[in-house]
Image (cartoon, rainbow, N blue to C red; front, side, top):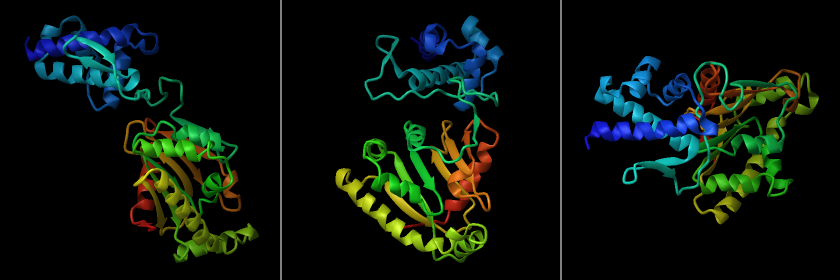
Amino acid sequence: MSIREQHLELFRAAMVHLTSREETLYTQVVICQKLKTLGIQVSTSLFSKMVNTPKSVGLRSVQRISEGVQELLRLELGLRYDHAQKVFVETTRHFSKKVVPTQDGNLFLNGTNELLFHADGRRSIAEKVEFISKAQEEVIFLGVRLRQLVSYFTHRKDAEFKEPLLKLLDCGVRVSCYLADPDHNPVRFYFSDLATALPEERFGEKAIPGLIMHLQKVQVEIRQILPGAPFHIFKYRHLPTAHFLAVDTDSVYGKILVSNYIFGVPRSKAPVIEVHHSSKLYGYYQSALEALIKDAVEVV
C-alpha cells in the first residue's frame, strides 16, 4: 500500500470517530478550526475534497490533514492509530482529555468562555485546584508575597491542595512560585505607597523572607516524597502590578487567572479575569507575565 493510501485509510478511520461519536459530532468547519489551532491550515474546500474526492488532493495535503485528525483524536478521545489493525484504539497511557479550542474568537466548544470575569475577587482553593488540574507542562504562581499559597500548605488539609499538586509534580509538571524581591526598592515603594490608603500594608515586604522560608520547607517536604520534583521558588525584581496563576502558557491550552491590583483595594478583593489561549487578550497577559519573570532569581 502506498504512503498516500495509508494516510487516506487513517483519515477515513478518524472521520468515523469525529462525525459519529456523541462527544465529537463535529462539522467539517469545526474540524478545520481545530486543525488551525493545532497549527495546520486547511481550508474547508480542501477538507471537503479530502472527504469526497481525495484523488484531487495532493500528497502533502493528504499527509498534513491525516496527521492533524490523528492528533485531534489523541488529544480529545485518547485514541491512537494501530497501523496493523487499521483502526483507532484506546491508548494504554493515562488519558487526560483536552478539548482543542476553535479559533472563532468566541467560545471553547466545551462551553467555556475564552474570557471570564470574576467580580467577586480571589478564587477559592477548590476553584484553583480545578483550574490547574489538567496542566501538562507548567503551573506558575506569581504574587507579591504568595501568603495565601503558603497557607494552603500550612493551614489546609493535604487532600485539599498539597496532594493534587503532588499528582501534577509526579507527572512531570513544573511548578514555579514567584514572589516580589523584598530588597528591591520598587517593592518597598509599593508597600509604602499602598500604606497611604491601606495602613496595614506598611512594611509589608518584611513578611516576604518568612514566607519564602515556608515555601522552602514545602519544597524539602515535596522532594522527600518525590526526589527531584520540579518545584521551584523565585524572586522577581519589578513593581508588583498583578497576581497570576498560569497554566501551560506556551500551549494552545494555555490559560491564566489574573488579578490586576487596584490601589486602595485589598488584593484578595480585586476582580479576577480568566483568560484562555483563544482570547485576543491572552497574548497581552502572557507577555506581561513573561516580562515579570524574565530576570527572576531562583531561591536555592
